[in-house]
View 1 (tube, rainbow, N blue to C red):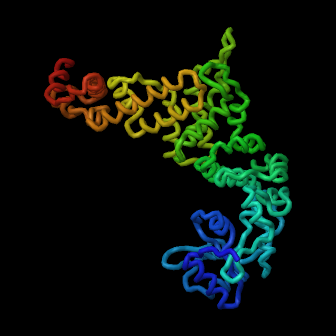
View 2 (view 1 turned 30 degrees about the vertical axis):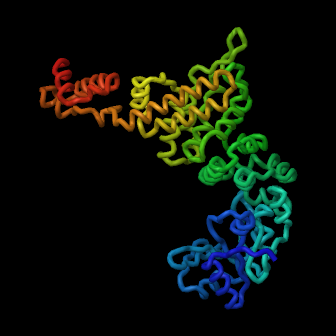
View 3 (view 1 turned 180 degrees about the vertical axis):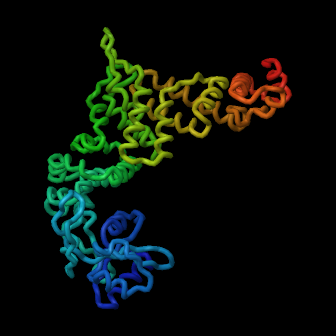
Length: 443
């Protein structure tokens, strides 16, 4: 019998429920992750006990979803969701069951779960309960629905995007019957809230296989949740610098970007403006003039539509705006670039530029990468030397100018920016006395 190491608190919950005369098992993703020797992010417990019976067994509980049978058991300020075995009634909105029926049968509960690899239950007495060949699918690396795929997706349309997300996280393929059902039912994703779509999209993008977004496109999912990506896949790039469609270039960019939410989103969207700006010259070469400006606005619109937080939107906007900005590989140009982009964002912008380059053709690739390396070497040198690259570190302030007789107003800003320009050219001139004299010359 396969043994899984249950955390002490999970074993305590199961043991207490069993001692009170009920069945109880760890269930779902935590069992799957344990079988894959991954560390579960959380542990869920399912039980034959009804919500009020669960509450009677444990001293501290929270009614987190009691109408659906879920009670959170608190142990030393840590919460564990404990849910009564249940059968879901008819689904009316591709998300919520009209009613929930409690059952004493574990298998009936497992039948309502989305995928075979998420339909495991486990306790130390019974071992793994696997009613739907989930172990086989786990070994073969397959995402397959429990029972009829069309029924599972009809119950909750988000499961279609979850199928792609799990395939990306685990490196699994999606079973053909499950794929067919997704193709047929993908339009029903329009009923799902932007917040739920966003959460799954982020998990997919920060996974080990973010390019499985390609599957979301091929299965008709992005046509509903991100139609701009479909336009990207349909756009050729006949240009020496490129070898892929815009969409495939974005997939390759994702593979060369580290697993950071804002960076991966920027990698996905950095060229999203290309389809609408494509022109072809008389030699058959494609150009995308203005795609950065168009793409920046599109990226912002997409993230707002998907209800992303302002911090993420600000970062992605900055990364997209400057991903194609190419300073010369000398200290003056790099200082100006840091000033323009902002020292907080500069390294990340260069990461996106590197990923962008690695996703292009081999044409001049080595030269491009060498330039990026040199720019980053200069960036490190500039930052370690604490050279002035913004008004914050300029050795003269607006108060100094007021003391010289400059009236309050925009003239102060104009003089400070002129002095900053001088220091960006020659960092050794960032001296209070020198800048005071230069300011006097401007009066």
